[in-house]
Image (tube, rainbow, N blue to C red; front, side):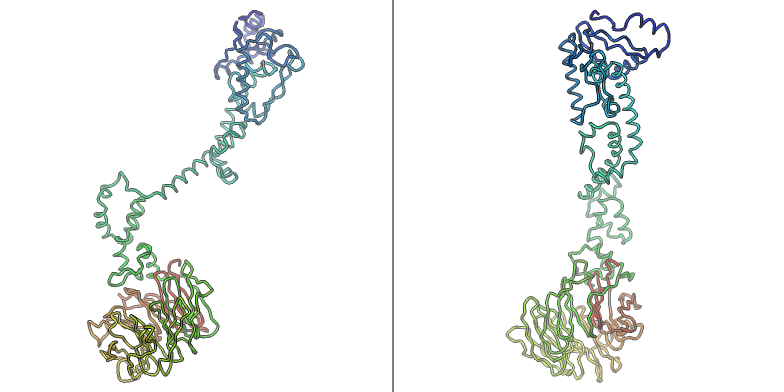
Length: 630
């Protein structure tokens, strides 16, 4: 029973060695080596596992007597044996503390309570699965062979626990690796938590819980990559450090080179990298392409009418206009047949219904209206035939022969008698109002508040006036009449004196009345009417002959027209609500959109369009063609 003596009797050692059988009778393994000083020297992890396997293979030794060094303690004593030194107790206390930290308060591993009852025959409880598979793999030598004394159980159980813990950890790692791909989406949907969100519980669980957590690593890595990609997309793109020598050129030179590319080449170039995508979105590169496109917001002189919208986006939408791709919808309906007129201003639409003018606000998509009108403007006793917007005023012409002036943002309304018969048309620019009537006269009026209703000039047109327009230079105005006399239906008058300046065309057939006319520039204008033609006039070339003309294919009367100031021209026909799009660089019609069926055939009384939508007013409803989201 000396301090440095081996705990296995010589007879048992010689018997197990001489037999040559590696797996002898497995009784109980001998306790760990104890030095003379009573200091237990714990081996490393690998050495502890190897020692445990060796104890199990060689066979057990008789249990030492109570009270020997390294024993399990006296009967009935709950603490260590009396022969243990203070250092042994210190190591045991450290082992308990380490074990408590790993468990994190999740319960103690099932081990026998040492010292209770018979100390020599201490009966340990059955260890829990978490300790066998999980904690057994992480515990050091003090949790294996060296802890048997403090638990009151056998040394054999400690060795078996250490071996099983090592094997359980290896199995758990294989199981976790096998489950990793299968648990990706399930973990993401059920928990939605990131890696490391609950590290304490993950460490305190057994191998099964660790396998589930390990199975989510790939999913968490994928989520992290997606977040990194989204963050990179939000950051401003920088010029690539390495790449072709072309990208090293100054931006001014790159702009000059890329300006020679067409739309398809710029689109492919934008797919190379993020920096080129940003660089090729510059408005300067797309301006030349936009000016050659349909309805891109540029006039023929290069004026940008929609500077707030990126040019590249406008070019994309213009392709839908060219190809005729659009989505049809109905904005408003009314029960009675009417002859509505409408105007657009910003995000508002003004439309006449009977003797009222209603103002509606567009929703952000531009293809729908708020059902409740912003304002209702009244004052006429009969239907409103025509109206225009000028200087925050609505100037309306009614079938009662009166002109009404309404302030848009107030309830101020003034009306006065202007003609004997119905006023068919009206226009206002620069504080001057001109009106045309069925009574074969055209009149000039001031818009100044102190002179409302005072006629400046009365012009005898000798024919019914259907349309009228003021020149952008405010020096003249043009009238379109019914062409019932022996003179041209298009005549230009001096605005200051009321004298006839010139007449346009000389080959109009009788009855070829002009229903709509508009100035495109101070020297160019467009007209349409009963003769089924759209004519383009240039006063600098000739007043006797139009420069260009487009014929309606179905020989229908053209009630209205609208242009983008560049290449696109839209007309409204008298039958089936047909809206036609024309490219002014060619004679043939580009696209036709019939908006009504046979039972509800209606002319298109008025049409307006923006770069994204076209609006057409018919007898029973207001239609929209959405070219932005076809």
